[in-house]
Length: 280
Image 1 (cartoon, rainbow, N blue to C red):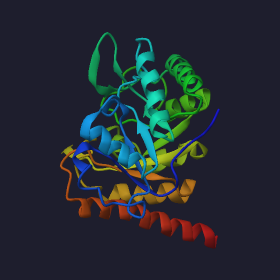
Image 2: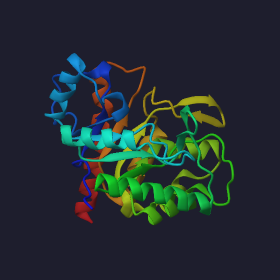
Image 3: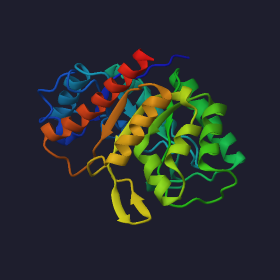
Image 4: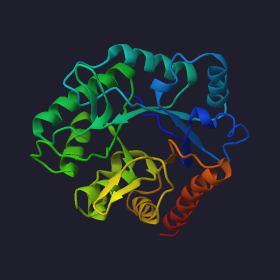
């Protein structure tokens, strides 16, 4: 089973609103890009043509929104067939999803927390294995943000590590989600990071969030990355080595030159940690 992941460097999530503004960007500015397949499968016309131009210029990865890994409903094999064909059509490197669920008898339009139980570990890992067998490569699961914790028989870190191990899949390490969850569920973000199975990290996400209250952060991807989250990214590189990292920005998108400054900050932290490793 193949393992295909981004080239090392700093990436950016591609939105339709960025197709024009990013037209002059090169791989010196952005080393790889990511899209949600649900937003691009079967898109034709000028958007389809523009997307093809991007996939011919940049390495791409997919980050799914609606496969609903932890759902009690059957896996969506029609969607998986479309994803597999889409990856082949555009030479896309890899596919990732959220360690959560978003559907049952209908779509819930939000990412819901999976109960942290041994039964759920077995159930979710089996579904991941089926997906990996179908795609012919390992996928990676993102540590998701969550705002309630139903059925907790184990901790978040224990559940996450158990699923990754049993399914033998990768980890898409979302640094902002660790920070958000550490505030909302009152744990130490650095201790959580230290407990992660670092050998499973394939690439990372970093993003901004919204301060709803002193003890509540909402994972919006609609603001600049804050310094404590940048510090956690630096810590992740020191702990696991430098890995490809992508900036997520879904709305309130600033001018491209400002957006690329945040992408550039990822690269700066990566270079600093690469030099440190080389000198060790």
